[in-house]
Image 1 (cartoon, rainbow, N blue to C red):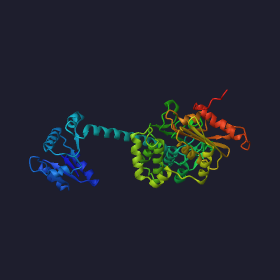
Image 2: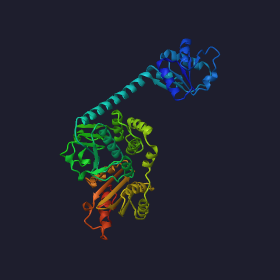
Image 3: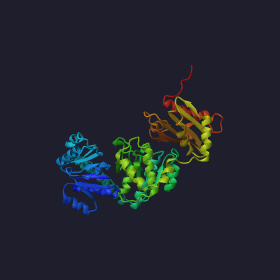
Length: 468
């Protein structure tokens, strides 16, 4: 039970909300007419007169006391009366008009103090943020409505769950306003174990950017990436839409509509576009967007903003939680178990880097799962797993080193074929770019190790020096 000293508009609103939460609320009021009015609205009311035989047990069994008198002198008087009772009181919360009174109230044992001016200012700033989101959504909607033709949504070279969820959301948003869209990337999607399941549940067909006739599209969007260099979109094409959460120099971002906001994930921004545009987010898409936020913020420990937390909370209300759990911990395939056993036999630890060349691999989605597993060994700071799939070498790397940005490392080692985030990265490199030795040659494994592992170790400063 909560006891409210005072009423007014604020006190009545607090009581209504507590009642909707099935909390017991009792008003303590001095004015009999005000008490009668609130009693008529179904609230429990007691007249507050500490000089009379007031039922002290009512105070002692309360979960909390709320002072909501709008006049600070009235609240100050009530505090003095409570102190005069000489009993142990529940925690006190006071709503005061201004923070100037905060120290005075705290000195008298008030546990939580909420200045009304500060609450109003916080709500106003939040409302201004909502207005800004509404303005951006209106601009994007009007842009799409003014165009004709099909849109191509392009992700980063090696899209992660945040990129895929955001691309699916933008595709859904565009369709709501009459624009059909395709999603494409220039790399591979096997760098993250959740990607295969996510594409399946969202029915998201991911096209190869290098094989598309780009002239058949009239609109081009970059999502979760803001520069051509990280997406492989040709220089001749001007992006119509750019939505990203990564901080990049403004001079490198060229497009018609640009929304670059520093949040933990692009999924956060795309969820806002869907809500502001009145576009339904179904349970599967809500689960995908929630996963995008979780993975890009590394479980809310990296670059998380209040907006990420609020959007994630709203998404959970709509998401298919069973699906979200399955996405969070994708099952290992039979081949993954075989490859895991093979990796434990072949892996070697060099300067804190646990690395393995898996040889030929049928299912490249197993590679990032093994990279995650190897990183868990004691004394390991980095993991590097790679294997041959068809005519390409699939690479997955992980690190615990906060000073390292693996995505940048792999981009520099294999430009145009790799990328990622600070702690996880992936690549899909044409075999001919790495070695001319045939996979059937007995020297192939050593040749591939030199092209991938040795270069990686050298980049990290871990390559052992040769003995003279």
